[in-house]
Length: 336
Image (cartoon, rainbow, N blue to C red; front, side, top):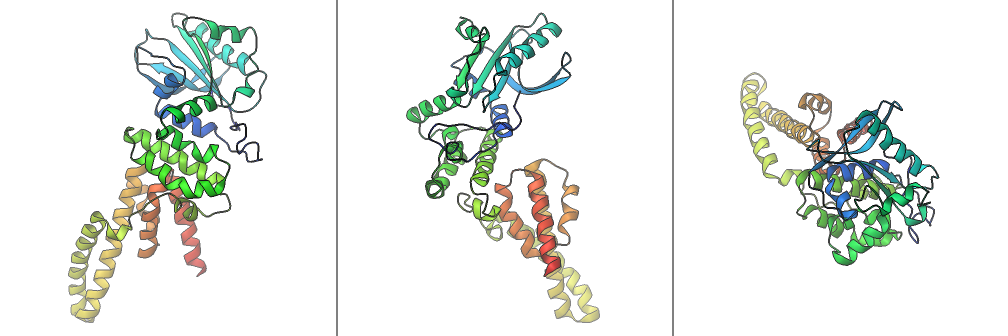
């Protein structure tokens, strides 16, 4: 179960400098996108494939997010908890969750993984800590900081190492200088596209938290190499189609109010509609939502606003970010 309001805590890191960053959602997203990482951290080699899901324990009427579910019901299940702050009861809670699941599913083999962000957070609560000495690895405790340090020595270009850089490095000047190369490592990695998207999203979110006084655009410009929307092939093709339609509209209108005037206006309308269709499609595809949720929101934006939105879509984390951007731009247009 992911702890609400958990914060990473690193020795000689940003935590010691008074910078607290929330990590609960980010850690869950990261490891749920690639559960194999948890087994790498624990040096385990499961014989099955797993996915991280949320389940509700009837005993407590409480949801736990860190549940590793195997493909086969004959394989062990895992309860995972991420702990980023001092908590004397963390061992007890995780054991209780495992026990409650065992009461409901007495035939299943149950194991636990407790991930501390820093070894100093581990109280090694007895008797539960002694379970870590069991030969079948039924209960494992790992320290994420130690693992990342080892991983960076072994493979400094690993995408996981790059993803955690905004979190682990205190010096903001170093972040500004190297953010682009770290982000590029993630994008050029061999990770599956959905996993890569998650890593990029988390990197972006942590960069935003480190530079809270910067605008969204200022932060993303530190690392995102965007191709201007006007230069993309898809944009040019859609605009060309829009212009042809606009010319037809213009010809018809031109017969009534003047061919030249009608053609120009028709081309402008066609280009704007083509841009709206393109960006609506990009937002819908990226965030897997219905295009009808996007298209109406773009109608009151100017073409240049829609193009600017397109330039930022890649670095946005959710459709809520896109909708917020649109709402903010509408307010600016109204005030102008």
